[in-house]
Length: 261
Image (cartoon, rainbow, N blue to C red; front, side, top):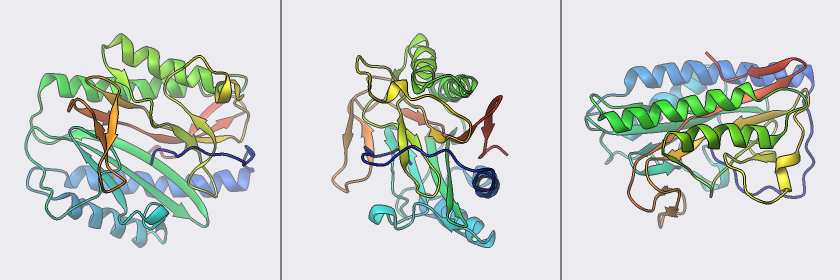
């Protein structure tokens, strides 16, 4: 789940025990994602997917991180076509051939969180939608390469922005990735773009730092608008959007992806 602005809290690297707890949450997350991927097809509602995810998480003895967070009513965010993030699952929202669907979910295990997202096509999708999904996934991969001691948040942001814009797409600027651990959203923020400010970009990646990196990429312009429900964010121009996310830990020699299968 994309992060709000976070102020007044220090960045705290995690201990090895904390990292192992988060990795267990990440394994539950990965198994839940696998079940969701199998279930996504035309004729399924986003509420059906929400029930599948909640059951998978609770069967593993964990809790859905999102449900009840700041009043959010569901286990997953299900964002279809022009919805960037935070789409609330609904019995009335039926998936159709040609749609693209971004699913974002969090898992809490013994007080620690793992957060991740993926985007898939429903049935046969057009070539541009497929390219949007592929570029967004590759942008996350490019960011993960930059996760190593001595690099900074700027390196992550530049990797995402450079890959996305070279492909002719745009990076959402109103929403960012975030630190994660005992809280779903912790410092530092992790933008997917670089602006002229200093701010968070100089934060150094040190062993034990855990972050959720989440490129949100639009086929059109980067501008977004929020629906009246206070949650759903969609592209202003109606273009399609894709979203991928992993929770990762900085290690002594690189990156550990805690939500990897």
